[in-house]
Image 1 (cartoon, rainbow, N blue to C red):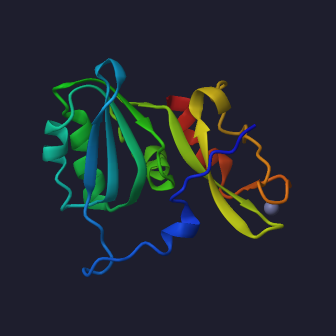
Image 2: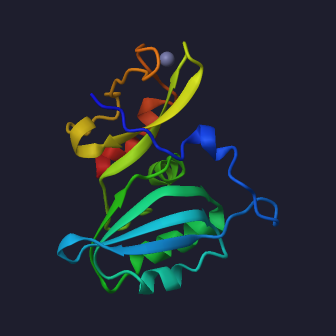
Length: 182
Ligand SMILES: [Zn+2]
């Protein structure tokens, strides 16, 4: 099975330049038109009390794919704003979450209604190779890797460097809990 590695994985995240205000990175997004009128919205940065989710909501209409790979941090104020945001998208007909970062996955597991009406399609999961001492976030597809919706079935991958089996670097029943609901 091919391993799709997050180019912005944890190894490179450590060298992202910090802005002046104590390392926080304001939320920005990019809107792209896809085929069949689909809109792809890619978020980057942190969801906190400064994130302009009202403006983001006004940019979203029709069928929306929300790319969440580069959402690195959410604080408690951000969670409250986010839950209101997904609940109130009058112009959105359908929404899916793709490439959810581990930060997003943790929220999906902890916060009731974090995804609203959205369907979670793909997400990153933390693996490591003990032999090479490397951490790698592997992109998983809910329909492909969890077609039985069982959080205990950890997908297996091999290290691209040495070929050894990668080890899942979290608690499966906790990290994959949300797949039972999507
Ligand atoms: Zn290895």
